[in-house]
Image (cartoon, rainbow, N blue to C red; front, side, top):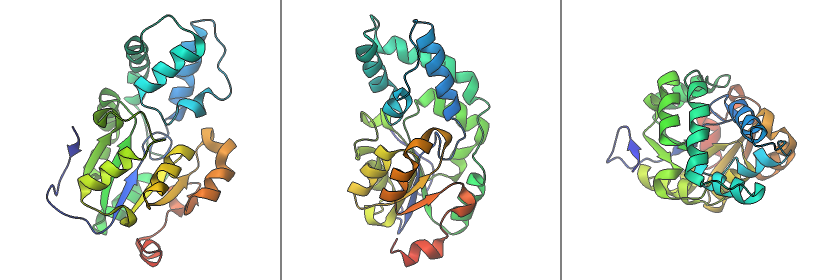
Amino acid sequence: MVYEQSNRSRAWQRAVLFDLDGTLFDSLGIWERIDREFLSDRGIALPDDYAQTVEHMSLNTAAQYTIKHFRLDEQAQDLVQEWQERARNAYATVQYKPFAQHYMQYLRSQSVAIALVTSLSRPLFEQANQATQVSQYADAVCLIEDIGSAGKHEPDIFQHASHVLQCEPQHCIVFEDTVAGIRSASQLGMQTCAVLDQRTQPVWQTLQSIANYAITDFSQAPTLDMLTMAGL
């Protein structure tokens, strides 16, 4: 099931697809703390590469990976429930990254379709939405868990958002902070914009090299004229 906020029958000529964690929301610090505390409770130190490994995964896929990698005698659904309980209060006060909300308002004023494309679970998205009212800007909200995708290393969620908006992939641009997300969207012929986040600094050069655009904050985001000139 996909939330469709408005214009259900409209075919859009161009669309912007936004990731949430680390892209629109200043939230990845939440998960670093959760990961550290979760593993510490089990006597395990947080590996340096753990966050980058699981950041593009759905919670269920991340739980399965975590159980296998650390040889935990636990069930995936129990890990997901624990993570969501730890995250719920944090997402109740999550905030936009600098200029992100202004950019979304600008796109709305230009009649550009917007989809939110996220690996957040439904309860956490709803918590974050209460704090930010981000859904007011969106024509569609697509949750990875709703389509059964393992994560953004597969292009399924981006293709699904394109289908929901009735907008051809080549007329979509994806704002993402992960290498996996940028590569998957690019496979579909979508334009991409990498967004710098503290956790993605180690792979920032890679993101810059594979994305059409790269910004450190949304004051640098491409204008509609720039996107039109680039063929969006």
